[in-house]
Length: 104
Image (cartoon, rainbow, N blue to C red; front, top):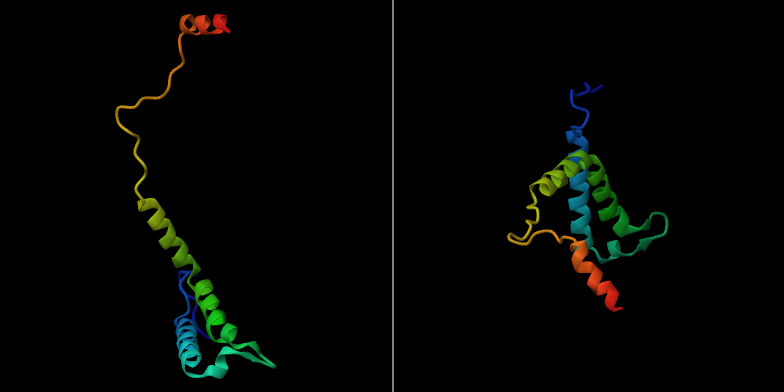
């Protein structure tokens, strides 16, 4: 029985290697074997089992690393700077507003 690692977010390397191999072989099978692109009576749609299932497995396996990478990109994204020289809009003084109201 394998020893648990100190970090629970570290993926099992054997599972990761198996999923990568499954994805690579599925990709090669899709390119080389035309019958692999269609449905199979007992298994369903073969592209799902050859490409999508191992891809989803890899996404699930590396979800913590993907979230951390997305956060790092979002934090480093430059923020929009305010235009220099343009201040915030201010209210008109009451003395300037009253003549406009009297004309109507």
